[in-house]
Figure 1 (cartoon, rainbow, N blue to C red):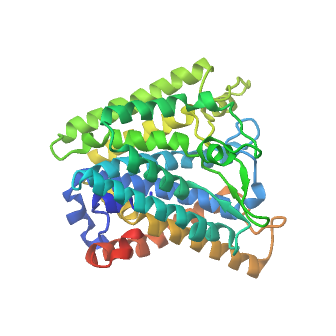
Figure 2: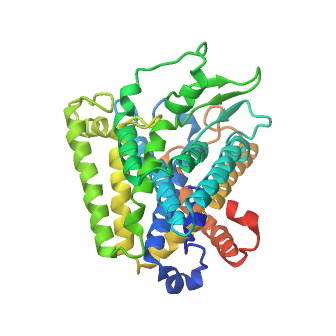
Length: 401
């Protein structure tokens, strides 16, 4: 998500008055930024839920057999976010490489990957916990994207065909490793936990880390993002690109339905509950940490379909607006986290805990209303920053947000 628009030189950094006139100049890049902006708004809904619905904590918000349908489908909306973020990271890295040497691209990815890892364990962790020093380092999506960029920095020197094979093999085959569990007594505990095991890792007597996003499957996703890069070459007819996106996107959805129906691989079995809605929820439920094959196939497939749709809708003002959100992704990400934390702490100080130990909304309507309000309010500083990045390319540090 972060630093992606810098790689592609996106046109998202455009003030509203000029958006319709100038952002459409490059439809490939507009569609990429618009898709990123769209999923960031879905992410906002989920983070509002996590902030103001703490009293409705559940072990798994998409547990089809226990979670209420309203919470299940609200959470389900955000399932597309991480796969799209990381797929677009690989795609954008490829587009960056078309204007730079592979060595320059590799160095670029390495530096930014390290930056994202450090950002996660500092500013992002503090935004979630408001603790310093933190008791737990939550290694989440920004950390994951950073690690994936570092890995891609080394692998991009191999042939694209090899990267396609490796990406498919990881995404399709990593569930074969689900039974491999490594304990703290093993010297492989930390590396295996970072790769494929969601656990706590003790760092000091005071601090521990949580591998929320085991990175191995996501490495496969970033490689597939790199692999579709040639579809977005300047010499590729948009109709051909859209056709490819639609074919692969629909193909992934059909394959998901077929494999999921067989109930033999890639996810815990779904069950016939006797209730059509609950049965559908069970069928669609998929493990995200780490993401199973049944999680990645429909989310990546839907992402590709949306990418095709947004390119076809290039002349719509709504696409230009979404592209502005996607033009300053890290700025928006950090801003919304700190705004949410500040709002929660202020509300708690003024009104006190009204939901057990927490301050929160009575239900999801409040979550949706606040999400819409924040989406509108945060548009203006995001637009300002995106425009600033375009105007002040001489300020090197601006590109890091």
